[in-house]
Length: 146
Image (cartoon, rainbow, N blue to C red; front, top):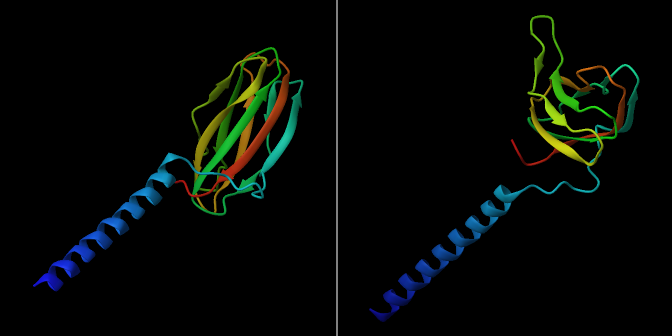
């Protein structure tokens, strides 16, 4: 009888240990995804445009997930940033809600946007009044989030 109690206690202990490990792993994933240092940027460039509009390079999403867009606005007017899904033959162009980056923003601002595998996207930076754009733009995929 004592042997059955020990076996039962051991099974309960193993069960709680496994459950605790799963919770720790899942909590680590929910709190934030770290971007590996070797993950390349889709684009990392200085943006300068006298007409108040900049269009990034086009890129195809390798997988469903998120991209992080960062813009450091060095201009005199607030800049708006949008991720745009390129228009296809039967598809209408889709845009994210604009992110506004105030003028003279040395720390920059971040926007996360969802992309679908196999679709083509680009980022635009523009000003409402057409003031010159000046700043730095970085676009990078985020692994492990959807």
